[in-house]
Structures are given as structure tokens and as C-alpha cells.
Length: 112
Image (cartoon, rainbow, N blue to C red; front, top):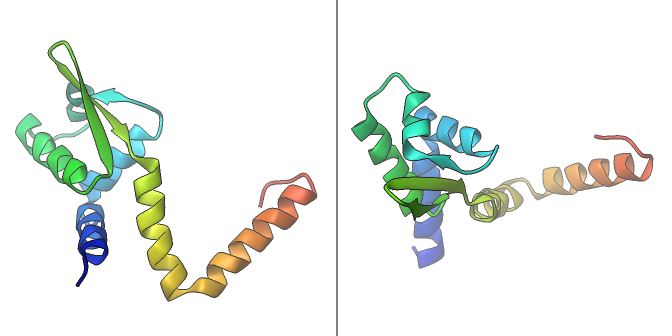
């Protein structure tokens, strides 16, 4: 298995957990502090830290320090690239259909 495959395996391992998927969804709205993320769950802050570590290790989130806070941001490109590459390999006709459907709807001035 090459580095790319191992990197993608890490992404899918990270996505396997529902708490981590929820964290990614929560980050859709923009950057959040670790404490803000933890406050949304009924599990301990150290557990959330471990989840954030897995997401960071998989490249799905980035972090930056702001004083004593750690702020997390969704790495949308990484997520889209990893999942998109897998989907296009497994069901390329679906990707083509979705793009075609989206393009047709856009041309007609409506959402798909």
C-alpha cells in the first residue's frame, strides 16, 4: 500500500466514528475553540481532545493557538479530495451523473 492509500485509510478511520463526523459537521460553520466543541457533547473534554487529535492526524482539521485557546478549522479540501477520489474510483458514473445533474440545474437557474 502506498503513502496515498495509507493517508486515505487514516481519513476513513477518522470518519468511522460518529463523534468525529459530528465535530466535522460542527466545524462547517467556521472555526471553533476546543472548549466550544467539547461543550456540544456529553463526553469528557479529554475524550474530545483525543477525537480532535485523530481528526488532525488524518489532516481533516487544522489547529491554531490563540492565547490559551486552541482553535480548529475544517480542512475541506482534504476531506473532499480523499472521499472524492474514493467515490470516483468506485462509482465514476455516479460522479458524472451528479456533475451533469448539477450543471443542468445551474444552467436552468435552479439548485439540483
